[in-house]
Structure formats: C-alpha cells, structure tokens
Image 1 (cartoon, rainbow, N blue to C red):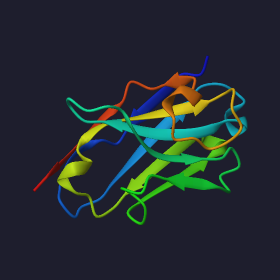
Image 2: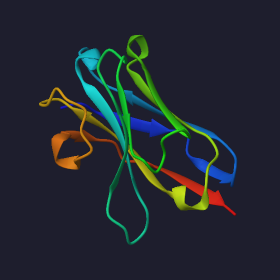
Image 3: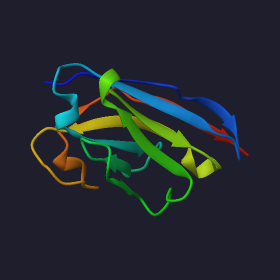
Length: 125
C-alpha cells in the first residue's frame, strides 16, 4: 500500500494560483503513474490530470488544460499540481492517487489503487 499526503490547498481569489503537493511513502514511487482528481460538494469525483512515472508524459482534463500543470520530483517522492487562472468552478477537494497496477494514463478512478485524504481548494469570485 502507498500512503499519500496532500498539502497546499487554501482560499484564493478567482484568477489566482495555487500549487498542490502530494508526497508518497515507499521506495518505488518512480514506478507509478500518478493522478489528481477533485470532488465538489454534491458532485461526482472528476479527473484532473495524470503523469507517467518518469514525468515525461502528462494528460489533462479538458476543463483544466492550459491552466493546470502536473509535475513530479521522484527524488522527493512528490507530485505537484500547479493551478493558474483559477475559477470558482475549480472549488473542490483535490486528491492525489497512484496507479500501481496499470501502466497507462487514465481518467477513470477505478484504474487507481491508492488515494490521499484530499486538500480543500476554494476559489472566491
């Protein structure tokens, strides 16, 4: 099992930026593709972005493409989500996740095996 701990959430005005971090336990972090999902109150969990183990390939939801950027530092067992030009509709709990059993980049939550507790992002208008 991989333990994931997110940080960096908070309250920001529309148009602002935040950077989320997610630190993973274990020695095989670079073997796993990682992802970020979000869930707003009363809504289903939504894919945001995913990144390959090497960091060379990334995949984004259309709703965040061009505004958000996912990256990772395998030496620090950490994946990041840089969020720019934030909108009120980006308000949600953001969770990072790890795909231990699938090698591709997926938007389906069922492909991911381990989840963090999440960090709240609130964007005011």
